[in-house]
Image (cartoon, rainbow, N blue to C red):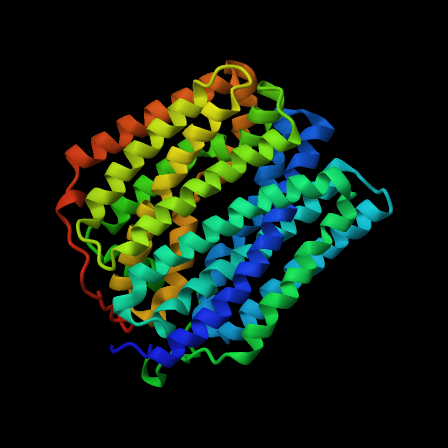
Length: 419
């Protein structure tokens, strides 16, 4: 099937994407503020893990359903509703802090709804990319996205840390609602190309059949399940870093909010620099080699971060920078592979199924990260996670066929065969 993407749809996507960057900035600021508040309020690793768990759980549960909706419903409306309800959720947090109803578990519960709406947002936004961006521009656009996403995520913690010094939390949270307005205007003005009528999902098909077809689309691509398994294990073993990083800086290393902002900004800066390098080269070959080599380098960065001397935030920042530097390489190669081999009319289902598979163990990883860190020490947990990741990717590279697989064509799926 030929792509509907054109130069005009590409321009429309860039306009839409610019608005989404503003929305991301607001979300980044809010997420930093909420995590910082929970960490300072409790200084409890188990509660911090639980906060991450409940933030992610709705996204994990409803992610597959979101992908089916993305291929079946109006994608423009779905994106708008996801952004709108996320802003409404933030508004409820504003009211809780304004009226001094600062119950930790209530904040965690309300914040979990943000994860739900983000879970619907991500598959839909990624499903429209092949429809609006010509195939030859996919890798470069993915890299450009990492550049600006990295820039926004670098600015977010710095902005949040600065605002925390001068404003109460309820006023800071308004930034998410204001940036929503910047995101919704481009969305209302652009046209998202519909799927070709002959490829539209037939209305009589059940959601279960559509979901199963998404899984079958993954299975027919050689070694794609192996790649997803790799991503799943890496996600599990890397979860302690993302879940406990604020605690690691502020409690383990006695850092301030400024130290935390600098460390998190350094991590995002690594993504920014890595993405710039990715975007300079238009076409990348040997994507699988780049993915595995990048993972190895990233884990070296994690080890450096874990071995930082007490209160040495420079070493922590360097380690975080190295890890984040390779993320655009790995994720751009992986995302481009998916966008290349999966037909556009199945992108929503496949993307949501990919998220489900890759994050299958995330709830468990989030909920046990805190107790494990209390049991063995957070530094030991970080180091162990990095060593296991390195051993795992070496094993997969040596004993699977994934390194010999090429991903350069679309794999079609006969949906009339639902067995």
